[in-house]
Image 1: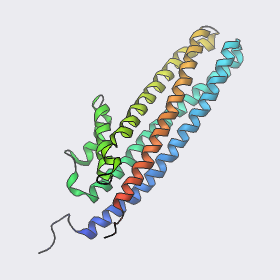
Image 2: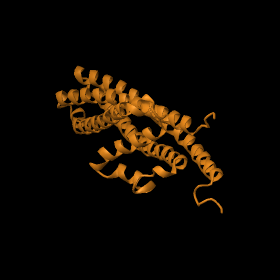
Image 3: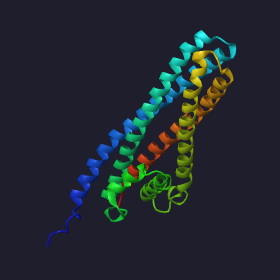
Image 4: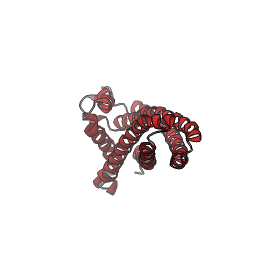
Amino acid sequence: MGQPVGTDPAAAGRTVAARTADGRFWYAAALALLAADAGVALWLLGRQIHLHGLVTGGAWDAALRDEMWTDNLLDVLRALTLATVIVFLLWFQSVRDATEARLPGRRERGGRSWSMIWWFVPVVNLWMGLRITLDVWSANAAEGSRARSAGWLPVAGWWVLSMYALTRFEDAAREFDEASSGVRTGEAAAEMRESLAHGMAADGWYLAGAAATAALVVCLTRTARRAASPRPR
């Protein structure tokens, strides 16, 4: 008799190879966008430091011009962040698909579609995003390795840091938008200085979150590739 559907080793190998190729593209795209995020965040940090000095010195004409630059950079970073989140999820799904092709018996309830949908369900995603990431990390870590037994620590650290960094960034961006009217009218200098100080701190957290996410992308990709590579008999 022939082999049951879905158990042909050659077909499974071709599936893993195809999904690995897709994963390489999304891996490179995710790292490129994270690097772009970091570059724009550093540029934004420099503009905020400069604008803080102008507001403190009462140079309102120059501050008005600098405020427009800073506001534009915030918009650019917001757009880049959204693009990065989307590409990150596509990279993560490619890793998960390759893992399921290699280990077909480990598919979670709800399958492929739900593994993406959970990321967009408010409140629930705060837990499910971490749980799905931990599941893929554990499935690719070598049996008995430290990465499998204690892997939840770096993954949980990445998750908490990245969520906190994104929250701080959005809060600081909204605060800056509200305080920008102070630059345009020459009033509320104290509020603008405070919003800029919060923005600079948020940039620091954003850069830390971007670095942690890049580390996760690199480490999980390498772990998945090692798990998929043929082992000597």
